[in-house]
Length: 469
Image (cartoon, rainbow, N blue to C red; front, side, top):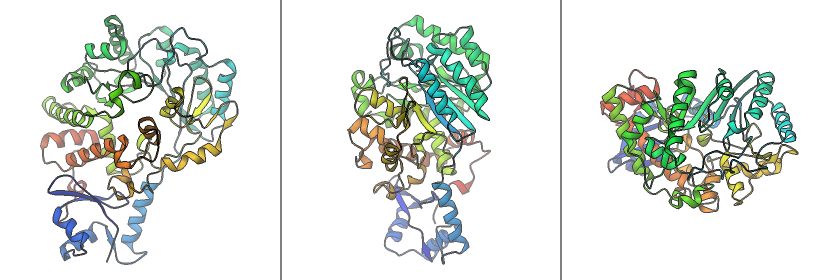
């Protein structure tokens, strides 16, 4: 019997998580790991590994082929629809303290697409070798140039067989024209709700009247299009975070059933206003505390509020092919079909990459709409967006579910070769995946109540929580 190499990670003094390269995992007592390391597995150990597909007798047998099938499904990232972020303007009508894109003032000139840039953007979209696309409008505040958004939307609905739009907006202004744009069935709304009014005012608006206008507009939009087409996320100042119960209640008040916790991103103006965002000390503790209180509240109220990122990580663990969230896509090689087009026509592989260019830390642009993509630059950036061969990642049981973020490494450390376990990206995801595994193996009925609703299950089957004898 030949055993596929196993990676392992201690979750506590007693339990160890083990996984192979395909992402198949199981929990074991510390004694199992000791026997595995010494090549002293018992007949019972060997039978478990054989039954669960962690071993094979010879190349080409059913167990061998099954493993290769699972492994290849983890490695494959399907073509899928294109995903392009457009920045028609960098101007904004708010001055959020944690702004990560270094917005331009409302009255500034030279921070919007001109006519030529607009036409080149349309030509770039037209040249994409896809029939399905999601276009996300960001800023600044994109509704300041609703005319540009409308031109793109009309073109895209004609050019692509299937198209959807996401408008990332602060919802400070809502008029007849913006409501008409949001009223289309193919438009989704993404906004920021930082929690209770006091927190939202402190972090974003700086003005109680502006906060009240946002709350009213958010309610109007939800009433108009339904809660299913509106997503909101809080940005957390870890030096002064909202109480978890108050944050959850703020979302429940609007009927929202999902939120996505994010610490302040160490980008843009936030690098000056929130220096501690570089390391975000205390984030993991706050995150875990929030999840525990969310689970307790769900059990108490019978609701199904989810924290998006944890729920997504759980789904990544349980099934391959969930690659729609690019932070954890692996490989996530930059291409023109997954790009950001800035206000000046420069093209970037990610939103964070354009932020680094904005503060002049490094130019990671991969071309511009005037001259097209820079394929030499694309080739240069590609290796940093694959974790399959990273000397640290290859020893981690979470590698099949995880990704990389060299741009974040550059932002925080000024280099891409940071030892993986020292990077913020790795530390964050080790904590999230540890928590996900602990919840999967929990026997607490309150935990199972939330997990079943996040995963769409009647109950958690034992097959999702394998344990070695």
